Length: 305
Image (cartoon, rainbow, N blue to C red; front, side, top):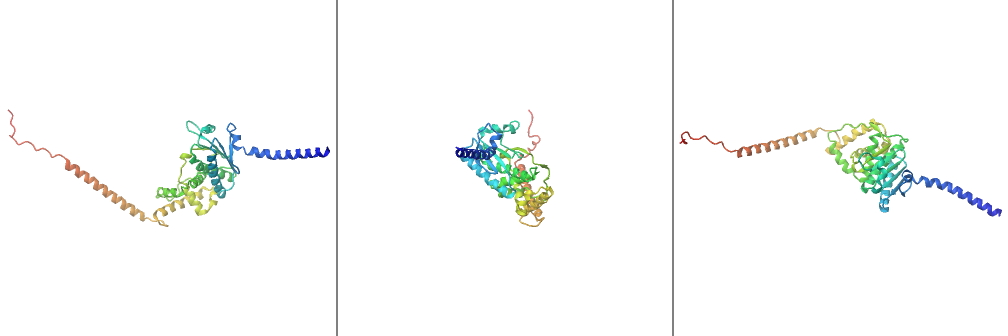
Protein backbone atom coordinates (compact mmCIF):
# COMPACT_ATOMS: atom_id res chain seq x y z
CA UNK A 1 0.00 0.00 0.00
CA UNK A 2 2.80 2.39 0.86
CA UNK A 3 4.37 1.73 -2.53
CA UNK A 4 1.09 2.41 -4.32
CA UNK A 5 0.48 5.53 -2.23
CA UNK A 6 3.98 6.80 -2.98
CA UNK A 7 3.47 6.29 -6.69
CA UNK A 8 0.14 8.11 -6.58
CA UNK A 9 1.74 11.02 -4.76
CA UNK A 10 4.54 11.11 -7.33
CA UNK A 11 2.06 11.09 -10.21
CA UNK A 12 0.06 13.85 -8.56
CA UNK A 13 3.15 15.96 -8.06
CA UNK A 14 4.22 15.54 -11.67
CA UNK A 15 0.71 16.42 -12.83
CA UNK A 16 0.73 19.56 -10.72
CA UNK A 17 4.07 20.57 -12.18
CA UNK A 18 2.93 19.96 -15.74
CA UNK A 19 -0.30 21.89 -15.21
CA UNK A 20 1.63 24.71 -13.63
CA UNK A 21 3.86 24.89 -16.73
CA UNK A 22 1.09 24.50 -19.32
CA UNK A 23 -1.35 27.00 -17.87
CA UNK A 24 0.75 30.15 -18.55
CA UNK A 25 1.48 29.00 -22.11
CA UNK A 26 -2.24 28.55 -22.74
CA UNK A 27 -3.00 31.98 -21.32
CA UNK A 28 -0.23 33.65 -23.29
CA UNK A 29 -1.57 32.24 -26.58
CA UNK A 30 -4.93 34.01 -26.19
CA UNK A 31 -3.68 37.42 -27.28
CA UNK A 32 -6.75 38.48 -29.24
CA UNK A 33 -9.26 36.61 -27.07
CA UNK A 34 -8.08 38.47 -23.97
CA UNK A 35 -8.66 41.79 -25.69
CA UNK A 36 -11.92 40.87 -27.43
CA UNK A 37 -13.55 38.03 -25.42
CA UNK A 38 -16.93 38.40 -27.14
CA UNK A 39 -15.45 36.97 -30.35
CA UNK A 40 -14.28 33.40 -31.04
CA UNK A 41 -10.70 33.45 -32.28
CA UNK A 42 -8.62 30.85 -34.10
CA UNK A 43 -4.84 31.01 -33.97
CA UNK A 44 -3.26 30.35 -37.36
CA UNK A 45 0.33 31.39 -36.66
CA UNK A 46 2.41 31.24 -33.50
CA UNK A 47 5.70 32.86 -32.54
CA UNK A 48 6.89 36.36 -31.76
CA UNK A 49 4.31 37.57 -34.26
CA UNK A 50 1.11 35.57 -33.71
CA UNK A 51 -1.85 35.73 -36.08
CA UNK A 52 -5.46 35.17 -34.99
CA UNK A 53 -8.59 35.22 -37.12
CA UNK A 54 -12.31 35.56 -36.41
CA UNK A 55 -14.90 34.81 -39.08
CA UNK A 56 -12.21 34.45 -41.77
CA UNK A 57 -12.27 31.36 -44.04
CA UNK A 58 -9.40 28.96 -43.41
CA UNK A 59 -7.83 29.36 -46.87
CA UNK A 60 -7.83 33.15 -46.57
CA UNK A 61 -6.46 32.92 -43.03
CA UNK A 62 -3.51 30.85 -44.23
CA UNK A 63 -2.82 33.33 -47.02
CA UNK A 64 -2.84 36.25 -44.59
CA UNK A 65 -0.61 34.39 -42.13
CA UNK A 66 1.87 33.63 -44.92
CA UNK A 67 2.06 37.29 -45.98
CA UNK A 68 2.47 38.46 -42.40
CA UNK A 69 5.16 35.87 -41.73
CA UNK A 70 7.08 36.94 -44.82
CA UNK A 71 7.07 40.65 -44.04
CA UNK A 72 7.78 40.14 -40.32
CA UNK A 73 10.82 38.09 -41.36
CA UNK A 74 12.09 41.02 -43.44
CA UNK A 75 11.59 43.40 -40.55
CA UNK A 76 13.40 41.13 -38.06
CA UNK A 77 16.34 40.79 -40.45
CA UNK A 78 16.58 44.55 -40.99
CA UNK A 79 15.52 46.12 -37.70
CA UNK A 80 15.55 43.42 -35.01
CA UNK A 81 13.25 41.06 -33.14
CA UNK A 82 9.87 42.25 -31.90
CA UNK A 83 6.55 40.86 -30.69
CA UNK A 84 2.99 41.50 -31.80
CA UNK A 85 -0.44 39.90 -31.89
CA UNK A 86 -2.22 40.41 -35.22
CA UNK A 87 -6.01 40.08 -34.97
CA UNK A 88 -7.85 39.70 -38.28
CA UNK A 89 -11.63 40.03 -38.35
CA UNK A 90 -14.20 39.45 -41.05
CA UNK A 91 -16.15 42.49 -42.18
CA UNK A 92 -19.24 41.16 -40.40
CA UNK A 93 -17.32 41.42 -37.12
CA UNK A 94 -15.93 44.88 -37.75
CA UNK A 95 -18.05 46.13 -34.83
CA UNK A 96 -15.23 45.14 -32.47
CA UNK A 97 -13.24 48.02 -33.94
CA UNK A 98 -16.00 50.60 -33.76
CA UNK A 99 -14.51 52.09 -30.61
CA UNK A 100 -11.39 53.05 -32.58
CA UNK A 101 -13.08 55.33 -35.12
CA UNK A 102 -14.97 58.56 -34.86
CA UNK A 103 -17.90 59.94 -36.78
CA UNK A 104 -19.04 58.01 -39.85
CA UNK A 105 -15.62 56.55 -40.65
CA UNK A 106 -15.64 52.74 -40.87
CA UNK A 107 -13.11 50.71 -38.92
CA UNK A 108 -10.24 49.53 -41.14
CA UNK A 109 -6.99 49.22 -39.20
CA UNK A 110 -5.92 49.86 -35.61
CA UNK A 111 -2.81 49.21 -33.59
CA UNK A 112 -1.51 49.83 -30.09
CA UNK A 113 2.27 50.04 -29.85
CA UNK A 114 2.39 49.84 -26.07
CA UNK A 115 0.14 46.77 -25.94
CA UNK A 116 1.79 45.23 -29.01
CA UNK A 117 -1.25 44.30 -31.06
CA UNK A 118 -2.73 45.04 -34.48
CA UNK A 119 -6.39 44.76 -35.46
CA UNK A 120 -7.32 44.62 -39.15
CA UNK A 121 -10.62 44.39 -41.02
CA UNK A 122 -10.31 41.82 -43.86
CA UNK A 123 -13.05 43.37 -46.01
CA UNK A 124 -10.45 44.05 -48.72
CA UNK A 125 -8.10 41.03 -48.74
CA UNK A 126 -5.56 42.68 -51.02
CA UNK A 127 -4.79 45.30 -48.38
CA UNK A 128 -4.07 42.95 -45.47
CA UNK A 129 -0.42 42.23 -46.35
CA UNK A 130 0.45 45.91 -46.96
CA UNK A 131 -1.45 47.00 -43.84
CA UNK A 132 0.35 44.40 -41.73
CA UNK A 133 3.71 45.50 -43.18
CA UNK A 134 2.97 49.11 -42.28
CA UNK A 135 1.81 48.24 -38.75
CA UNK A 136 4.52 45.73 -37.88
CA UNK A 137 7.25 48.15 -38.97
CA UNK A 138 5.94 50.63 -36.42
CA UNK A 139 5.87 47.87 -33.80
CA UNK A 140 9.49 46.90 -34.51
CA UNK A 141 10.79 50.48 -34.50
CA UNK A 142 9.02 51.25 -31.23
CA UNK A 143 10.27 48.12 -29.47
CA UNK A 144 13.83 48.32 -30.79
CA UNK A 145 13.93 51.94 -29.64
CA UNK A 146 13.54 50.77 -26.05
CA UNK A 147 9.73 50.85 -26.14
CA UNK A 148 9.93 54.56 -26.81
CA UNK A 149 8.41 56.55 -29.70
CA UNK A 150 10.51 56.64 -32.87
CA UNK A 151 10.79 60.03 -34.65
CA UNK A 152 8.22 60.87 -37.28
CA UNK A 153 7.96 61.01 -40.21
CA UNK A 154 11.00 58.69 -40.22
CA UNK A 155 9.02 55.75 -38.81
CA UNK A 156 6.17 56.24 -41.28
CA UNK A 157 8.51 56.49 -44.25
CA UNK A 158 10.30 53.28 -43.26
CA UNK A 159 6.90 51.60 -42.87
CA UNK A 160 5.97 52.71 -46.40
CA UNK A 161 9.16 51.07 -47.68
CA UNK A 162 8.07 47.67 -46.36
CA UNK A 163 4.58 48.28 -47.68
CA UNK A 164 5.98 49.01 -51.15
CA UNK A 165 8.15 45.89 -50.98
CA UNK A 166 5.27 43.53 -50.30
CA UNK A 167 3.35 45.17 -53.15
CA UNK A 168 6.42 44.99 -55.41
CA UNK A 169 5.93 48.69 -56.25
CA UNK A 170 9.39 50.13 -55.63
CA UNK A 171 10.34 50.33 -59.32
CA UNK A 172 7.06 52.09 -60.14
CA UNK A 173 7.49 54.50 -57.22
CA UNK A 174 11.03 55.32 -58.34
CA UNK A 175 9.79 56.42 -61.77
CA UNK A 176 7.07 58.44 -60.09
CA UNK A 177 9.33 60.38 -57.71
CA UNK A 178 11.96 61.07 -60.40
CA UNK A 179 9.55 63.40 -62.17
CA UNK A 180 8.09 64.88 -58.98
CA UNK A 181 11.50 65.89 -57.63
CA UNK A 182 13.12 67.11 -60.85
CA UNK A 183 13.48 70.70 -59.66
CA UNK A 184 14.25 69.98 -55.98
CA UNK A 185 17.66 68.67 -54.93
CA UNK A 186 17.67 70.11 -51.42
CA UNK A 187 16.13 68.48 -48.35
CA UNK A 188 12.62 69.76 -47.71
CA UNK A 189 11.28 67.35 -45.06
CA UNK A 190 11.40 68.08 -41.33
CA UNK A 191 12.49 64.61 -40.19
CA UNK A 192 12.13 65.39 -36.51
CA UNK A 193 8.71 67.00 -36.68
CA UNK A 194 7.03 64.65 -34.19
CA UNK A 195 7.08 61.22 -32.55
CA UNK A 196 5.14 58.00 -33.07
CA UNK A 197 1.66 57.95 -31.58
CA UNK A 198 1.17 54.86 -29.36
CA UNK A 199 -2.33 54.31 -30.77
CA UNK A 200 -2.84 54.56 -34.52
CA UNK A 201 -5.89 54.20 -36.77
CA UNK A 202 -5.73 54.37 -40.55
CA UNK A 203 -7.33 53.22 -43.80
CA UNK A 204 -5.03 50.89 -45.80
CA UNK A 205 -6.95 51.71 -48.96
CA UNK A 206 -5.73 55.33 -48.90
CA UNK A 207 -2.35 54.62 -47.32
CA UNK A 208 -0.28 55.13 -50.49
CA UNK A 209 3.06 56.96 -50.47
CA UNK A 210 5.83 56.74 -53.08
CA UNK A 211 8.30 57.98 -50.45
CA UNK A 212 9.31 54.37 -49.83
CA UNK A 213 11.75 54.92 -52.69
CA UNK A 214 13.70 57.26 -50.41
CA UNK A 215 14.27 54.51 -47.83
CA UNK A 216 15.21 52.12 -50.63
CA UNK A 217 17.95 54.58 -51.61
CA UNK A 218 19.06 55.02 -47.99
CA UNK A 219 19.36 51.27 -47.39
CA UNK A 220 21.12 50.69 -50.72
CA UNK A 221 23.62 53.44 -49.86
CA UNK A 222 24.17 52.92 -46.13
CA UNK A 223 22.83 49.44 -45.35
CA UNK A 224 20.00 48.43 -43.04
CA UNK A 225 21.75 49.97 -40.01
CA UNK A 226 20.39 53.30 -41.22
CA UNK A 227 16.90 52.14 -40.21
CA UNK A 228 17.86 52.60 -36.55
CA UNK A 229 18.98 56.20 -37.14
CA UNK A 230 16.92 58.70 -35.14
CA UNK A 231 18.92 61.85 -35.95
CA UNK A 232 16.83 64.17 -38.14
CA UNK A 233 19.97 65.90 -39.48
CA UNK A 234 21.32 62.61 -40.78
CA UNK A 235 18.07 61.89 -42.60
CA UNK A 236 18.06 65.41 -44.10
CA UNK A 237 21.54 64.81 -45.50
CA UNK A 238 20.42 61.51 -47.01
CA UNK A 239 17.32 63.19 -48.44
CA UNK A 240 19.50 65.72 -50.28
CA UNK A 241 21.62 62.90 -51.70
CA UNK A 242 18.48 61.04 -52.75
CA UNK A 243 16.99 64.04 -54.56
CA UNK A 244 20.26 64.66 -56.39
CA UNK A 245 20.33 61.00 -57.45
CA UNK A 246 16.77 61.28 -58.79
CA UNK A 247 17.79 64.13 -61.10
CA UNK A 248 20.87 62.17 -62.16
CA UNK A 249 18.71 59.15 -63.00
CA UNK A 250 16.32 61.32 -64.98
CA UNK A 251 18.98 63.25 -66.93
CA UNK A 252 21.45 60.40 -67.26
CA UNK A 253 24.24 62.45 -65.66
CA UNK A 254 26.09 61.77 -62.42
CA UNK A 255 27.14 65.40 -61.97
CA UNK A 256 24.97 68.52 -61.70
CA UNK A 257 24.39 70.29 -64.99
CA UNK A 258 22.45 73.25 -66.34
CA UNK A 259 22.22 71.87 -69.88
CA UNK A 260 18.61 70.99 -69.20
CA UNK A 261 17.81 74.71 -68.97
CA UNK A 262 18.65 75.11 -72.66
CA UNK A 263 16.45 72.17 -73.52
CA UNK A 264 13.58 73.58 -71.50
CA UNK A 265 14.07 76.98 -73.18
CA UNK A 266 13.98 75.43 -76.66
CA UNK A 267 10.87 73.42 -75.78
CA UNK A 268 9.12 76.49 -74.41
CA UNK A 269 10.10 78.46 -77.53
CA UNK A 270 8.71 75.79 -79.85
CA UNK A 271 5.46 75.64 -77.93
CA UNK A 272 5.23 79.45 -77.96
CA UNK A 273 5.76 79.63 -81.75
CA UNK A 274 3.17 76.90 -82.29
CA UNK A 275 0.62 78.70 -80.15
CA UNK A 276 1.29 81.98 -81.95
CA UNK A 277 0.80 80.30 -85.35
CA UNK A 278 -2.48 78.74 -84.17
CA UNK A 279 -3.79 82.05 -82.86
CA UNK A 280 -2.73 83.85 -86.07
CA UNK A 281 -4.50 81.24 -88.19
CA UNK A 282 -7.70 81.54 -86.17
CA UNK A 283 -7.66 85.32 -86.45
CA UNK A 284 -7.15 85.15 -90.24
CA UNK A 285 -9.94 82.64 -90.59
CA UNK A 286 -12.28 84.83 -88.59
CA UNK A 287 -11.48 87.88 -90.70
CA UNK A 288 -12.17 86.03 -93.94
CA UNK A 289 -15.62 85.08 -92.75
CA UNK A 290 -16.62 88.61 -91.81
CA UNK A 291 -19.38 90.07 -94.03
CA UNK A 292 -18.31 93.02 -96.21
CA UNK A 293 -19.76 96.38 -95.31
CA UNK A 294 -22.74 97.42 -97.49
CA UNK A 295 -21.97 100.48 -99.63
CA UNK A 296 -24.29 103.49 -99.24
CA UNK A 297 -26.99 103.89 -101.94
CA UNK A 298 -26.32 105.96 -105.08
CA UNK A 299 -27.60 109.50 -104.57
CA UNK A 300 -30.93 110.08 -106.37
CA UNK A 301 -31.36 106.39 -107.25
CA UNK A 302 -34.25 106.03 -104.82
CA UNK A 303 -37.07 108.65 -104.86
CA UNK A 304 -39.89 109.16 -102.47
CA UNK A 305 -43.42 109.20 -103.94
